[in-house]
Image 1 (tube, rainbow, N blue to C red):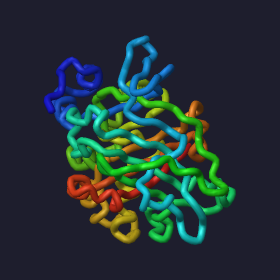
Image 2: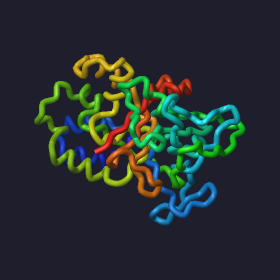
Image 3: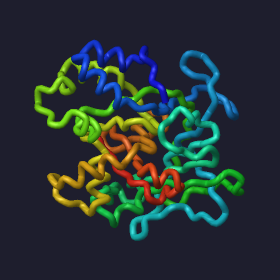
Image 4: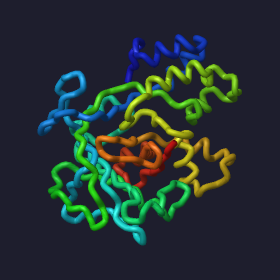
Length: 294
């Protein structure tokens, strides 16, 4: 889509970066959907912080609605996953995105959050035997569903209705597209300038639930983590990791959220990434999960 030249990120880049670098960096920006609490929401509608009525596009927490033949996701040998969020694809303004989200149906996100084992087992992209601990389920429109009771040991998270708004997202300084665009990068490259990075950080304050766009990592670029896992965990200096990292895009991230009583590690976030071709084919079983915390 065409980016607005008055977008705050464009302005920020041109204020802090040399002109040629700013134009190249702006070319890396991507549209995303920021998911925010729809305060005082009624059925199908919500009231934002500015008092404007906004459509509810999904929710954090509660209980999932699943098709009759779909079992509650379980990590064999460990236990049931917790239900994190569901999104109504028909309500999402996804035409603003540069990824091919379904036009209708529902996406449901599950994660093994440690409720049933005291946090002993962790889900990580470099441990394939843990991948069953995170799931994305897609329920096509028109498929009959019913609310499913939580399995023993799972306490549902409080329900937080969500609304969505379009925002322009920036890659973190160590994102693979930044490395590709500005290679080779020295430590004194303008993109790494402290004032520029501080200005970017100020724009990322607050809870960050997001669909599409660039991920907001708590630590390093999440694309490298899932790429290394997808390649079978080669050494970090394997050049294939850079190439593979460029193949993955953010599907969704869910932040620590006090309203939903969600705490991922120490104020961390959950991330699901997917290859664009798998998204087109609705192969959500091929999505990769990682998480980071402070």
